[in-house]
Structure formats: structure tokens, C-alpha cells
Length: 365
Image 1 (cartoon, helix red, strand yellow):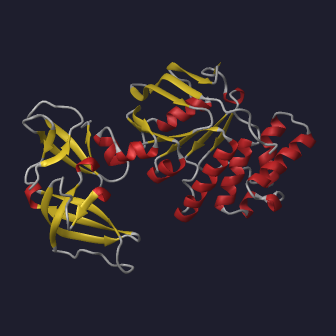
Image 2: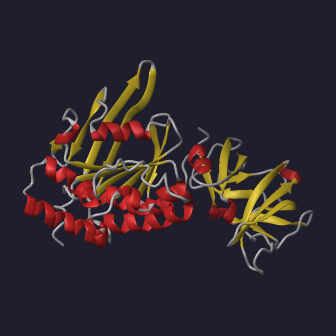
């Protein structure tokens, strides 16, 4: 369509650092987003993700490092010369301007002719499926429609990179889920390089080509959503991105397995490479990877007792006491009975275990 963007350009951050007084917000951060891809910066408040986005946008000046879009160095350019589009959490629409006027605002500032401006605005209204609402005002639209208008206003100027700053934070859960599909679909159709900042794990996993998990101003791990979720490299990533059961184990005398106390089958996981016998390692197992009732034959097996059971729609969440481990674990089990039912009752004794391939060794930091 006529609003199609030029060939997608990569975004590269090299050694970016930013401090506020003695507080380091971002520490030597490196990140590259391939042209046409969407990367999410995910992390808790204060981890540096928003500061990173603001440096890309030009609202903050990095203390060190460089920012490039394609071959162009933009580190010291003002925001209006960076050819970026940005969508904020609160949309920042002009309440006194119509939908069409809001979308065309950037084109008007760039002194684009009226005929071209009207054509590109009409194309954007068609793209966001609001063709009949160009004469309406933001207050007359739903939250999801306002969000689409904000997105169209950013895209109509044909930016090389799109920045999304918690774009769905103001929406309710059901609308937020539908907008995840809409934004992702639009981004893929246009093929625009996109940086998304969010603290919402589901949002990052469902919308991104890659997820970068941040903590204390650094990227701890970056990879596809499945890589980061299924194979976390640190305890922080395992616990922040979803729920995880964390164990401390001891390397077996032959150095090729991790042992946990109290297991009928002591090897909790086979190690990718030999380790120092007797060394302590940290193990992560996702609740949905654990089994109740019949434990896998090649993995550890523990005697357990159900201490909590909650129905959550398509799965049941169990809190399970494991006496030999002297702790309680969380287990998610796909629903297999009538609506609202759980398979294991409070106080019921059962076996608990997991397949060794579903356990991951993580760094403790």
C-alpha cells in the first residue's frame, strides 16, 4: 500500500551508559535490532529500560556510547532529526483536534502538501480500520481506538524506527490482549524496526521477535521468547519471566549430574559439561514442567502433599509440600476435568517429579 515504509533499517546501541549523579541507570549496554524486527526491553521499574528508550528517542543524552540507525550516527541529533516514530502509554493525542488532524499533525509540521497529507492520512485510517471516524475527536473513541490513532500518527511520517513506551499499559486486560495482536500484525505488515519497552511479561513474549531482560542497567539475557522463557541463564530471568521453582543442588561425584536431597532418583538434571564434584549449582524448573501423580522414570521422584489448589481457567495451580526438600513448590497442571475442577484435593499425597531435560542450570546472580 502507499504507506509502506522504506526498506527496514537496523538499530544499533553500542556501549550506552547513563548516570544521574551517582546512580547508574544504564551500564555499557549493547543492543542490535535487525531491520524489520521487534525487540522488547523487559524488566522491573528502575532497571534502565525507559532510560534506554529515551536515549534512542533523543530525550536523554548518553554519557558514553553511540546510537546508529543503519549507517547514520544519531547519538547527538535532536529528536526531530532522528526520523523516529513514538507511541506513549497515555497516547498524548490532542483533544481539540479530530482523529484525522491528529494523524496528520507530523505531516503538517513537515510542511507536506495538503493533497499528499490527505492521501497519507486516509491510508492510515484504512490501515487502523477507522475509515469512518476521521472527523471524530479522541474523547469519542474507545481506549483501543485512541491507541490505534496514536500508532497511526507515529507511522504516517514513515519513520525508520518505531518506539513503543508501555503502549498498552492504560488498557484493560481483554483489550490489551487484542491490541497485542493488532500492533504485532501491523508491525509485521509494514516491516518496521521496532523497540518496545514494557514490564509486562506476556506482552513481551507475545509481541516480540526477541526479548531482552534487563536488571540494574544491564541486559542479562536476550533471545527469542521461547529461548528466554524455556532456557533462562540466570536466577533473576527465571523468576522475573514467569514463575520458577529454584533449587540448590550438589554436583555428583562423577561430575556429570546435579543431585538433590531426598529423591528416589537422585539426578535432578544431567549437566551439559562436567563440573567440579561437590560444587553447588542452582536449578530452575518451571511449574508447568513438573508432574504430579506419576513422575518421569528418568528423573527425580519425591513424595509430596497438596497444600493448595486453585482453578485458573485452562489450568490448575497447586502448592505442594515436599518434606524431603523441606519446602513447598508450585505445579501447574492443564485442566482435564469439568470446568472449575481440580485433579488433586487438599491434603492428598502424590508423587512429584520432572524430566531432566525440563530443568535448567542458572547462574545465581
